[in-house]
Image (cartoon, rainbow, N blue to C red; front, side, top):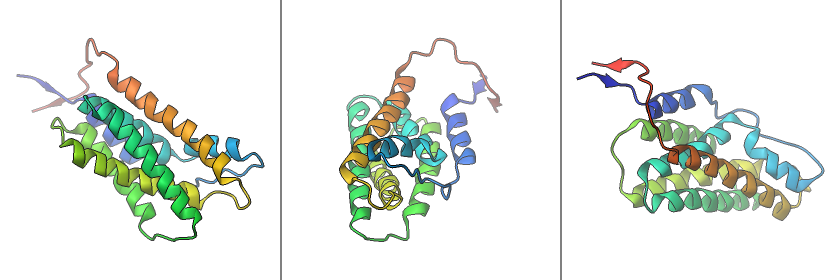
Length: 179
């Protein structure tokens, strides 16, 4: 029986190899909504994790299709506002790195975790990413406009991953083989 390397495993491996959590995330600008809208696209780590959450939600299926993206987005918003309060967390960048590594691994696994565990993990990842977004917001920027723009981009990226994950796959291309 010939076994092929699944596309999600390759995507997960590429995510962890391509992203660097300490990348520059800041997007300065006078328009707070535009700055927030562009921020998720300014760091490969943020971009990849949001798409990966959508892909993983599609892969798990059922209630996860709506719960995981909403858990990520809501936790991201909470983390962002907590960062604006002046609180500092030392584990944010390691949390972002861990989210990339673990989401990459999750995409490569054939088993599905309990929904509560998946939602908790995605919520923690969203919190770390949101905290980084909030901490990097330019001083004097309107937080409500910034986060409104950021949420539009976040939901777009989560939806992109979800849509890609829900597309029917007709003929998988065997990329590599496992013994």
